[in-house]
Length: 323
Length: 269
Image 1 (tube, chains in turn brown, purple):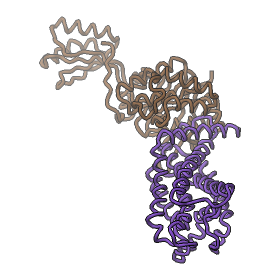
Image 2 (cartoon, each protein chain N blue to C red):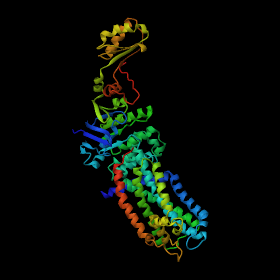
Image 3 (cartoon, helix red, strand yellow):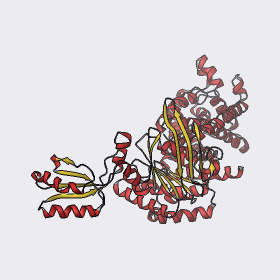
Image 4 (cartoon, chains in turn red, yellow):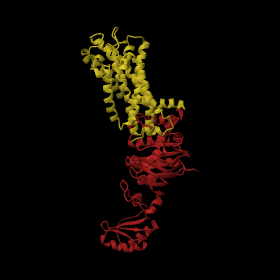
């Protein structure tokens, strides 16, 4: 099967700023690509080029097998776009917004109306369907905007920072919606500044910084690049920190990091939960009390830091797995 | 292909007309300000302004209405620009541009909904005019032509505004910019005072100002110029209808393509 999205050598310059500096992308049909990067990395520029809104200065792109530059209108029939802002008309009701989009996809009057009701129901906007969208919460507007991208059931969907600016609850709701969508086999290109979001939703992650792709792989592959799992523990009694270290050294696959002020030890390990159980048995046998213990897999934050040399402009996401 | 332009434009126009309905304030204020103008000029300035054909305030009210009509429909034509500036900013234009719709439909739909708005406003104003003593003294056909000319001229202005609206960074900038241009254009004209009262350089400008021509033309078509009052010598006013249509054509020829080009280029900022 041909990939749903192929981009080659995309370059876009604005006066003295190079927004994109030779970007290649391939998104196989039915998969989710997460385009991850800080503000101004060039994510939105890529989406705009692929959705025919912007002409690149160099390079080529195909979406659903159609050349984006040669046949933009044919591409528009195959895509759905939901942007960084909720692009809904706040004076129209939820229903009117979706019905209008259906008409503009040329679904016809009846089908547009049916489809609008269907989507409102599946996005849990039924009760608000006939209220002007001005009265919606931020999360509801985003869901309506996303529903707009799905009106024509397009095979390829672009979501540009779908959860930026949402509160945690709105974000979780949005993730649910996106996961349902993806389960249906739609090809999705998703941009995000949230490492956690790419990790959760994407099959493949492309890390972009200053208009260049700096890494590409699955979430696991990227984490591997930074190193495997680590065993992290905090002892209750600071004076027994060295003793704990000596006890656990045989289980580790590399040198330990000691953070004395936090009474914490970090060991690179292999074997996951089994190693953790083993470690607990050893420490318990020595009567060593712990305040905290866990297996820590590297977060995408660690990935970003090791790839770019700077942290992403996002609060660190702490992630503990396997405890 | 062309059939989709019309249905798409209709869908977009419908959206804007729903907005007129949902935000009645917008219509209320675009109608209230001309009503206020009618009353201010008719009762406050009217007594001090002498128009050819009589010094009484009634003669001034006859004179005034065509001018206020012209000013109002020109301001009505700015709704397109302000709306587009807002749509660009909110990403709605991005959404439209990513749809397989006819690209010109957004602008056509927008500008057409200005016409609907202007029709409503003209009706309200004409009724106000009748209440303060204005009247139509020509045949219904001539009167209809007078209103049509106002609407057609304003429609051409809508396209200028469409282009401008997508060029400026925000609705606020757009409103200030158009205010600064439209106010002098509609005042340095024969809209509120007879041209003869203006100092010479301004008078020449006013004679060639298309706003004067559209005002003169509709004044004639409504039969608001008393018998025996001569038409000013300037060519544009001697041929007010033709001159108005020339400007209308020029605006459309230049700004329809320019606005469409700007639309294809604009993305949210």
